[in-house]
Image (cartoon, rainbow, N blue to C red):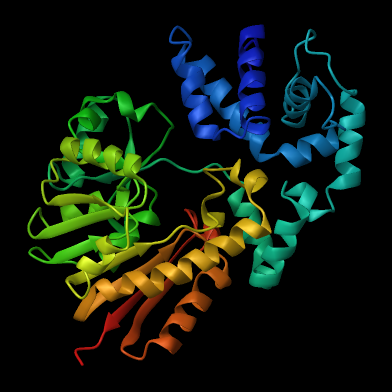
Length: 401
């Protein structure tokens, strides 16, 4: 790190860490807000603040252990920032002299790196759960989850082709590569503020990880179908479904949170996705009215999010076993109730961004054993060690009988 580090940068990172750890704010929202409040910062400053904040959050336990940062220390965030700079091989500014010596920090590395939960910076309970469910593969998956996520775009084929978008980005000196396994994906070679590009404002693409881009095609939709995205959220996969349907048919986006659907309405206008209709699930009647009416149903259910920790590193400090158990109960309820929207001969996809068998295969097996009219067609587990987010998807058909 060759750039000079200034007080205002460290102060911004310290304030962001306070909001994330002490007030429970989401890291991505905190960083976005921090950068918006300081529009005069240059691109290098903005990148340093964003990346350092994310890194300190991601490696919090490792940093705290090596730097002997105590929870009750008023200057713990400054000490953590200084420790991180030293761990990175950078020289901390002389004025940032909080904490123990760099020699002691380096000595602690030797002493602590044999403990996986410390080395990979996760809570003990999560390390135990991961090993229990994934066995020997937990090591490499955990390591992969600590890598920085790559920026992947999904081309909106309602407005542009992948080649046309790639060339438009190239004119703005943004290099992007294709991905063989995702027909509509482009990966940026360098991290840039892609949302400032005119082609984003024109609705030519959305930012969506490669693994997430595999879910909508897995549902096997066709133009003219009636499709329901029952846990639509802000609609990343809904928009993908609309493009695969070529804006023909009916695509109903459901969610219990109205504000998420409001964001989807904004995004669908930009994308030109006129086939989408949004409905808030504000009573049991919403689902009942749609019973046995859909050719396809997508259930991208709430989950632990353990497959996407590389892009949401603060989640591992907010998660707990009780929360995961609540999610598993909710997943079972959604599968039970929402599957009834699939008509005879139709199909549903159950999907999570988790890598835990208990949220994935076990949930599907339990559902199928209790519902003889549904059959598993195909399932797919994508692990973080494959290069992108961890995802699970199972396509289930409903018999004509």
